[in-house]
Length: 163
Image (cartoon, rainbow, N blue to C red; front, side, top):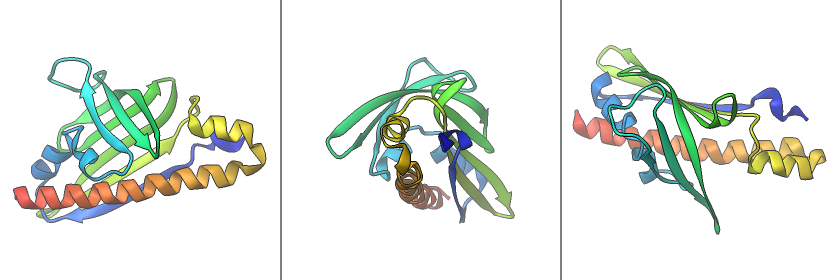
């Protein structure tokens, strides 16, 4: 099963705003729900302040299928990096990461998602249809890329309006 090659998607944009303005949007775990066709929002499972080790439950849907996931923050560097693992930290369903880099008065925001080896809808589909693995994985990554691009466009708009 090639699924364990950890396929990933990365999208990035330059935002006409300083790091702090961009971070204020990235730091809000519910901001992407305003832009994603799949992510409906999340709730922290612990009281703040949040950082490495904090967990949250995300709500998602695609078509008539709805599900929740528990994520753990694995990197949290204000104005720089926010990474979380969906599912078990040692056997993730996926790893999601926002990284911010100063470019003069602007900020470069990169959003990366990596498919993990934990049991998920993708891994179950591949197990049921091993001859279609590449097609299944490519289809999932294409959906991610579309939602990630929309999320970055939304974060950009919000951050630039703050600035």
